[in-house]
Length: 114
Length: 112
Image (tube, rainbow over all chains, first blue to last red; front, side, top):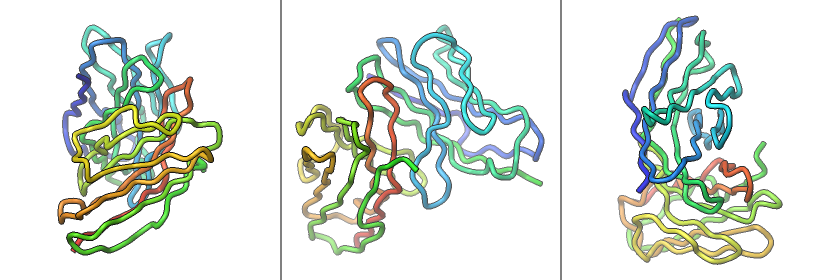
């Protein structure tokens, strides 16, 4: 069965500092991996995804993530945090079939300190 | 703008009542999923529909049911509402090839 863990329910960084949000997954087959962002009172927006190919994935708003199969990880990073990055971030996994369900982690709330 | 719209945006019900939430998926997306997001938690998978048939279900009781229609719209029905059903209900459509979900803004249900 698929599952996702996100280390740290809340992360605070200073404006301009590195953002690192951790995600580990379990999957019995090669996974599709996603990061979504949710701003208050809104739905979820896709930041980036990994399906196949290059393991370093670049997304919107300067975020990127690296798929490491040996570590079953898909950590999200951004070199320099902006105030507008403050939001809830969710890592998600689905298995390599088009119709399988997508399972979400519990989320990490990112605060950016001016 | 994802093209996925949900209604109503907010609603209040009392325990034991029934509720229907509606979703209009993005054109061309033949898979629709529903998620429940309780306050402070990640979205929990309720079920998924493909070509108008349920083809996956999470750990939710049968009083949660759904429908998908040929025009890409869908419904989530919840019977015998309980206080714990209070949550944000998210609809997401999914293109066949790429796999990512496109979410609506959600329907926030409060059960009193």
